[in-house]
Length: 260
Image (cartoon, rainbow, N blue to C red; front, side):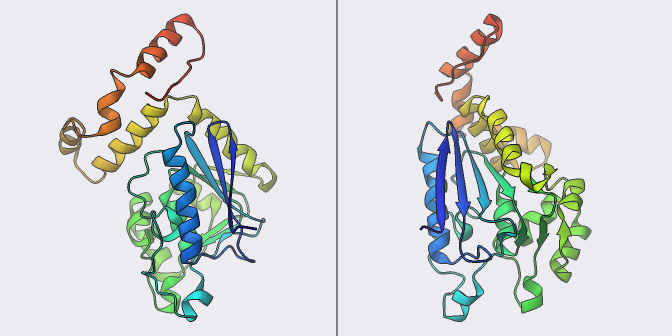
């Protein structure tokens, strides 16, 4: 059985990482995850992915330290999306929801930080323990976490390796929703279904604009957005879906999206 499996439900692609007892990731696992996210990107019939872990104890413990001890380097070929298939997938234009079913440590937490939305089981915990073994969280933790929560709180996590609860990260806005464990996947699919009710091209444009303007001041962000080279954004106002959305609104019916 593959360490990474996918299941399609309508416009939602569910991706499950199930590798050993702690869902640790090596280069081959990263490439398999990257292939799954590539499937999301390439299939016009898909709008959003849910990434979760197998079992109920670990979402992922991150980098497979056993593979590292056997000589696998951190810069090994990780595939299209870098470590965990997503942390450096700059070309992905479709949203990803992380459904966190247990502990998310190191690279497992960095995978979550690369997602767009996060639903967590109420027993889930998160941590970046790299400094405790002489490393740093360099697959997004150092960069993304201080941008998601106050710098002092983020640096405390990074510099002490402290584990935090899903409830604490919900308060900081890193996690969207915390639910009982037996409701996790239903909550993730409910969120995905709400995403799917929106026009696919609008979803892509929203993610594209955010990526292009992150870190810019307001005027610079507007200028960047209006520059004319953002593919999805430049298409939406003349798209078939924009016309369909208006027609559906006036006709009081659900729109039928074509993604163009």
